[in-house]
Length: 113
Image 1 (tube, rainbow, N blue to C red):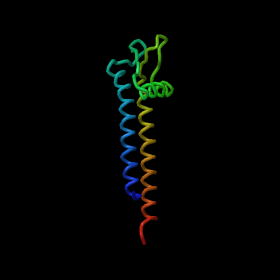
Image 2: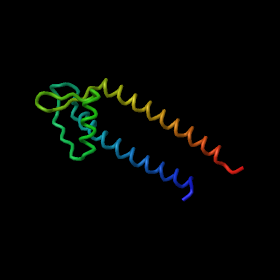
Image 3: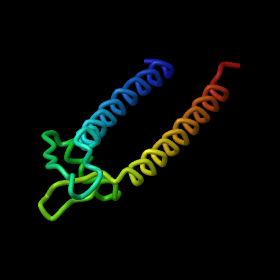
Protein backbone atom coordinates (compact mmCIF):
# COMPACT_ATOMS: atom_id res chain seq x y z
CA UNK A 1 0.00 0.00 0.00
CA UNK A 2 1.31 3.43 -0.91
CA UNK A 3 1.52 6.31 1.55
CA UNK A 4 -1.33 8.13 -0.16
CA UNK A 5 -3.61 5.12 0.32
CA UNK A 6 -2.71 4.93 4.02
CA UNK A 7 -3.50 8.61 4.44
CA UNK A 8 -6.87 8.18 2.72
CA UNK A 9 -7.66 5.14 4.87
CA UNK A 10 -6.74 7.03 8.04
CA UNK A 11 -8.91 9.98 7.00
CA UNK A 12 -11.94 7.78 6.34
CA UNK A 13 -11.47 5.82 9.58
CA UNK A 14 -11.02 9.03 11.57
CA UNK A 15 -14.17 10.54 10.08
CA UNK A 16 -16.19 7.39 10.82
CA UNK A 17 -15.02 7.23 14.44
CA UNK A 18 -15.73 10.93 14.92
CA UNK A 19 -19.22 10.55 13.48
CA UNK A 20 -20.03 7.69 15.88
CA UNK A 21 -18.76 9.65 18.89
CA UNK A 22 -20.60 12.83 17.98
CA UNK A 23 -23.85 10.95 17.30
CA UNK A 24 -23.68 9.20 20.66
CA UNK A 25 -23.13 12.48 22.52
CA UNK A 26 -25.86 14.13 20.45
CA UNK A 27 -28.44 11.51 21.39
CA UNK A 28 -27.71 12.02 25.08
CA UNK A 29 -27.93 15.81 24.94
CA UNK A 30 -30.94 15.75 22.60
CA UNK A 31 -32.89 13.61 25.05
CA UNK A 32 -32.39 16.27 27.71
CA UNK A 33 -33.20 19.12 25.31
CA UNK A 34 -36.35 17.38 24.11
CA UNK A 35 -37.53 17.00 27.71
CA UNK A 36 -36.56 20.64 28.35
CA UNK A 37 -34.50 19.48 31.32
CA UNK A 38 -32.74 22.81 31.85
CA UNK A 39 -33.46 23.16 35.59
CA UNK A 40 -33.18 20.76 38.52
CA UNK A 41 -36.98 20.54 38.82
CA UNK A 42 -37.20 19.41 35.16
CA UNK A 43 -34.44 16.79 35.45
CA UNK A 44 -35.03 13.41 33.81
CA UNK A 45 -33.71 9.89 34.25
CA UNK A 46 -30.93 9.11 31.79
CA UNK A 47 -29.93 5.49 31.33
CA UNK A 48 -27.55 5.11 28.39
CA UNK A 49 -27.62 1.59 26.98
CA UNK A 50 -24.30 1.65 25.17
CA UNK A 51 -20.79 1.97 26.58
CA UNK A 52 -20.36 5.14 24.51
CA UNK A 53 -23.49 6.61 26.07
CA UNK A 54 -22.15 5.85 29.55
CA UNK A 55 -18.80 7.34 28.55
CA UNK A 56 -20.44 10.59 27.43
CA UNK A 57 -22.65 10.75 30.51
CA UNK A 58 -19.58 10.58 32.76
CA UNK A 59 -17.65 12.99 30.59
CA UNK A 60 -20.42 15.60 30.48
CA UNK A 61 -21.07 15.32 34.22
CA UNK A 62 -17.35 15.74 34.83
CA UNK A 63 -17.27 18.82 32.60
CA UNK A 64 -20.18 20.38 34.48
CA UNK A 65 -22.48 20.28 31.45
CA UNK A 66 -24.87 17.83 33.10
CA UNK A 67 -25.87 18.11 36.72
CA UNK A 68 -27.17 15.20 38.76
CA UNK A 69 -29.95 15.59 41.28
CA UNK A 70 -30.10 13.66 44.56
CA UNK A 71 -32.68 11.34 42.96
CA UNK A 72 -30.26 10.35 40.18
CA UNK A 73 -31.87 12.42 37.44
CA UNK A 74 -29.91 14.78 35.22
CA UNK A 75 -30.44 18.24 33.79
CA UNK A 76 -28.54 20.20 31.14
CA UNK A 77 -26.79 23.47 31.95
CA UNK A 78 -27.22 25.41 28.68
CA UNK A 79 -24.43 27.92 29.30
CA UNK A 80 -21.94 25.17 30.15
CA UNK A 81 -23.04 23.19 27.10
CA UNK A 82 -22.44 26.21 24.82
CA UNK A 83 -18.96 26.77 26.30
CA UNK A 84 -18.15 23.05 26.07
CA UNK A 85 -19.17 22.88 22.40
CA UNK A 86 -17.21 26.03 21.50
CA UNK A 87 -14.12 24.66 23.23
CA UNK A 88 -14.41 21.31 21.45
CA UNK A 89 -14.89 22.99 18.07
CA UNK A 90 -11.86 25.19 18.62
CA UNK A 91 -9.76 22.18 19.62
CA UNK A 92 -10.95 20.17 16.60
CA UNK A 93 -10.11 23.05 14.27
CA UNK A 94 -6.61 23.30 15.75
CA UNK A 95 -6.05 19.56 15.33
CA UNK A 96 -7.29 19.55 11.73
CA UNK A 97 -5.13 22.58 10.93
CA UNK A 98 -2.08 20.90 12.44
CA UNK A 99 -2.72 17.68 10.53
CA UNK A 100 -3.09 19.58 7.27
CA UNK A 101 0.16 21.36 7.95
CA UNK A 102 1.93 18.06 8.67
CA UNK A 103 0.43 16.43 5.58
CA UNK A 104 1.40 19.36 3.39
CA UNK A 105 4.95 19.34 4.78
CA UNK A 106 5.26 15.58 4.32
CA UNK A 107 4.02 15.84 0.76
CA UNK A 108 6.52 18.60 0.03
CA UNK A 109 9.51 16.79 1.55
CA UNK A 110 8.64 13.33 0.22
CA UNK A 111 7.95 14.36 -3.36
CA UNK A 112 10.18 12.86 -6.03
CA UNK A 113 12.94 15.13 -7.23
